[in-house]
Amino acid sequence: MARRTRAELIAALKEAEEQKRQRRLALEAKEKQATRKLDTRRKIITGAAVLTHASLDPNFAAALRTALDQALTKPADRELLADLLNPAAAPTGTASDAQDTGTDAQGTAFDAQGTASEPQAAQSAPSEQTEHHQG
Image (cartoon, rainbow, N blue to C red; front, side, top):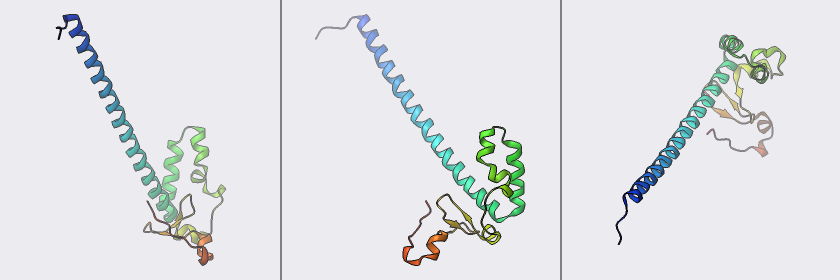
C-alpha cells in the first residue's frame, strides 16, 4: 500500500470533518423538530383544557375573552377566534349545554371532569353508537 501524501491526509481529514458536521446538523435539526412537536402538543392540550374550562365557568370565560382581546393583534387571528372574543355573535347550543359540557371539533362532548361522552347525534340513535377514545 502506498503512503498518502500530506495533502491527501489533509483532504481526508477535511472530508471526515465535513461528514461529522453534516451529521451534527442533521441531529440538531431532528432535535429541534422533536422539541417543536412536543411544544405544539402541549399547546393543543392546554388550549383544549382552557376552552373546556371556559365553557363551564362564565367568570373564566370573561377573563379569557379579555386576555385574548388584548393579546390578539393580527386580524386573521382575531377572525379565527371571533367566537371567543364575541360569544354573543357566535352560534351556540342551549344554555344548559354550555354549563354541562364542552365539545371538540368532532362533536364529542366533555363533562366538567373532561370525560368524553357520545356526540349528540349518536346519543339519540343508540343503534349507531360507536366508542370514542380520547387520545
